[in-house]
Image 1 (tube, rainbow over the protein chains, first blue to last red):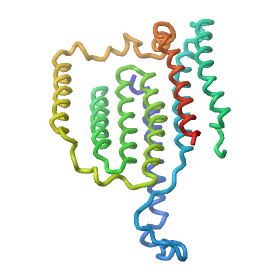
Image 2 (cartoon, rainbow over the protein chains, first blue to last red):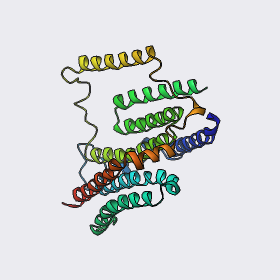
Image 3 (tube, chains in turn orange, green):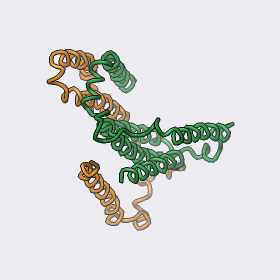
Image 4 (cartoon, rainbow over the protein chains, first blue to last red):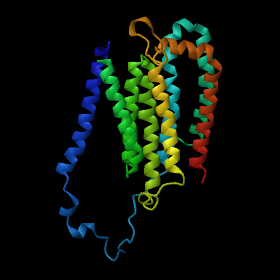
Length: 121
Length: 167
């Protein structure tokens, strides 16, 4: 029975190899920081040398996208058992899934109306 | 074979759990948590809960951890990782941790002593945890909680948009 999952194991292994391969390649190909020219690392002319280390700016939009993705991912997950049982549950299943979608459809419409799906606003 | 995989997955989970709480870089902690969830998924597979295993990887290792990564990136954007809080214990942390560890160790010993409690059902005789059984329970017995989940998700959707868009 366990051999059934061998393709998944192979898939996972390849994914990990690709992941580490990309990271390793960028380390090998990209030049390390100490080899970059000093002038490039300095602030632009008449700029002030920063006293504290600051990270990059990070938009709140990413959080919005991640949260919406999570919510609709959870919603999509509940479709799988319904899809498997659709013929057995018949109209009953269709009705309860319809109610489920209706409630979430309200949320979807709200996000759409408020421009949650627009990147620039 | 199954026992060996279970032990390996368990060791992976424990090791990654330790990495999660001891990593200096929060990003590393999140990645270790992803590995932890993958190990948990393997354990669910060994318990014949295929659907739960897939959900564990898709929802937890996928969506929830993406959210964690964004939150960590968001919190780390302005500052470096907090240096001053490291190395200091909260008051009463050590005895509390020892007490909780003791409780869990006692549970494990109890479970090993009473073997009938926690033995995985034999593979061929059961389809417990299959997507069909899960779906049947979800759409008949637990229909009300399922529909209420939609309301909880709706509240989450509106809350997110409200918090992120209102400035």
